[in-house]
Picture 1 (tube, rainbow, N blue to C red):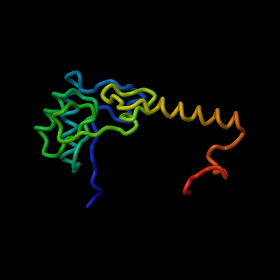
Picture 2 (tube, one colour; picture 1 turned 45 degrees about the vertical axis):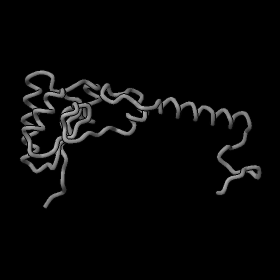
Picture 3 (cartoon, rainbow, N blue to C red; picture 1 turned 180 degrees about the vertical axis):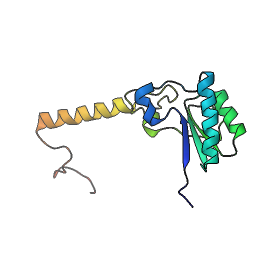
Picture 4 (cartoon, one colour; picture 1 turned 180 degrees about the horizontal axis):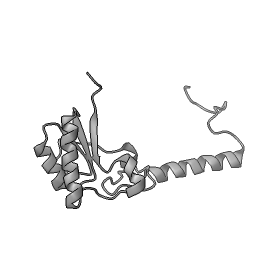
Amino acid sequence: MGIPVMGHLGLTPQSVHQLGYKSQARDKASKDKILKDSKSLQESGCFAIVLEHIPDKVASQLKHSLIIPVIGIGAGKDCDGQVIVTADILGLSKKQPPFAQPLIPGRDLFIEALKKWIESTELNQVNPTIKTSESKSDY
């Protein structure tokens, strides 16, 4: 018995650098390819398939034509489950995917915090991460 495998169709990590965050399966040929590939993944033993950044209708069609679950990332709400990349939901990505709007501006918050830390070390010439006798920490 082999290791359980989850398939991944649509926008895949290895294709982002070539395609950008462009939605997949928009034309008839690419839609037919995803339909064919999903059946091949199911037949090869995948326990589920992630569908990323494809039209809602294509994801819905796959959900109803496959016996394995389909999990959506920017593939509409008619999937068996939904996932999102943590860095995207926290706003840590330099370029946000259009299907993952951040809940907080995490990247900006981290950059600002790091700038403050750098400024504090330049002004005081003291490492702010080292406990001093004036600190009241339980560590």
